[in-house]
Picture (cartoon, rainbow, N blue to C red):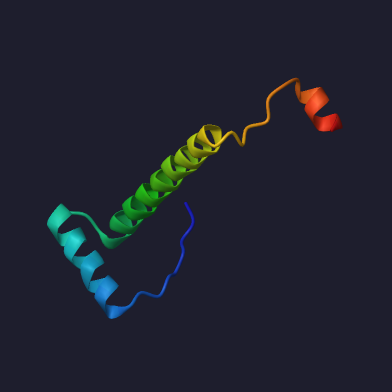
Length: 70
């Protein structure tokens, strides 16, 4: 596992410290969990965007070889 140094505003640092205290964990675990949740949110948003494109008819259909020749 690598280490990353990220400057936080005093407000964010206080919030991370509070969460770590409430959860009985450390600040690194709180930040890792937050990043994991953000990654999951991004994945959900990608699926929703893809579903919207399908609904709007922006999907290419057909044989991939034929589609690539166009």
